[in-house]
Image (cartoon, rainbow, N blue to C red):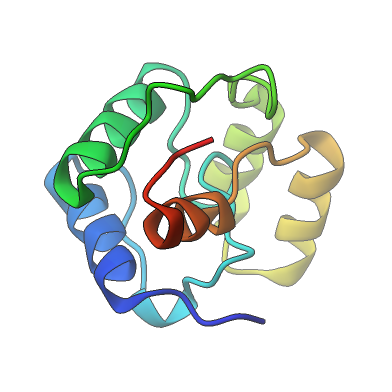
Length: 119
């Protein structure tokens, strides 16, 4: 897996701790990490996350549209699985992946950081 930019990694960790979204380990982040499924940033929170990301890194997000990815709404089934069993177990991650297809990955943010545009 491709390594994530350290500035981006720190920004994600800071956002999650600042808004108490979910406690995450910085070493567990990679480009295949899903913003909506793995980090549990969905609905209006993802809008705030993207706005802070664009402002912090001076990224042009004027051309960004959810039509390409699908709007991340979250899933009640996944939330129940995470609550009952935790999300660190492999089988919970696999089952959650069957219940809800991740829509927005950290790879998109990594690309935006490299190009300067969030598409």
